[in-house]
Each structure stands twice: as structure tokens, then as C-alpha cells.
Length: 140
Image 1 (cartoon, one colour):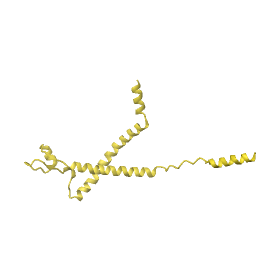
Image 2 (cartoon, one colour):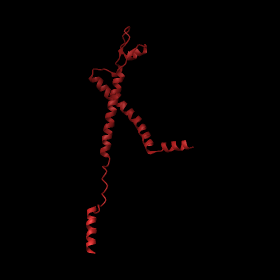
Image 3 (cartoon, rainbow, N blue to C red):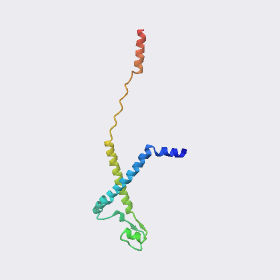
Image 4 (cartoon, rainbow, N blue to C red):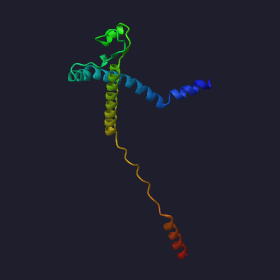
């Protein structure tokens, strides 16, 4: 019973719940960014680079047959070095990192700037107290 209780306390902590919400939102955000990259940015980049599709870039490691596309080479079972998808994933990562950076920057601007707590009134210093005690003793 102690193990189950301990697990329940762990699972119900605020940090675990916040992390779960973050993972769920991150998954949905990942789909948006993937669509942004695949459907908006990569066609523009492909147009600028003369119609090159990064995901189709590969090096044929078997010299016997030349393949026009990566799909054709993979379908034939050829040994290929498919580096294009890696380039695509680098673009995805850079865009996701930039979007997260911009979101955090916006959140920090929207976040209320915490005002410093009012300082407690300062009492007399030790020297002032000793001087006051001395003066009271003189007056007696």
C-alpha cells in the first residue's frame, strides 16, 4: 500500500501535471510546425533552389543501377545514403526552436512584472539604541 500511496503523491504533484499538459500541447504544436514547414516553407525553399526537394536527396551506394528518385531506389531495395530527410529534420528543428523562442519571449512580455515586496520599516540601528539607553541612564 505504501508504494501506491507514494506513486499517487508523485503523480499528483503540480510539476508532473504541468509537464503532462506541456507534452500534450507540444504534440499539437509539433503538428502545426510540421505543417508550416512541409506545406508553406519547403515549397518556397524548393522554388528558390530550382525545385529541389530535400527529402528526395540521396546518394546511391550501389553502382550497378542509377535511380531517379529515392522512392524508386528504396522500392528496388538499393543501398542508399538518404541525407535529404536529415536536412529536412534540421529545418524542422530550427523552425520549432525559433517558434518556441518567440512564444517564450511573448509570454515574458505579457507576464506581469512582479513588484518588489514593500520593505519592512527599519528600526533604529544598534548604535542608535545604545545612544538612547545612554541618554536615558544619564537622565535618571
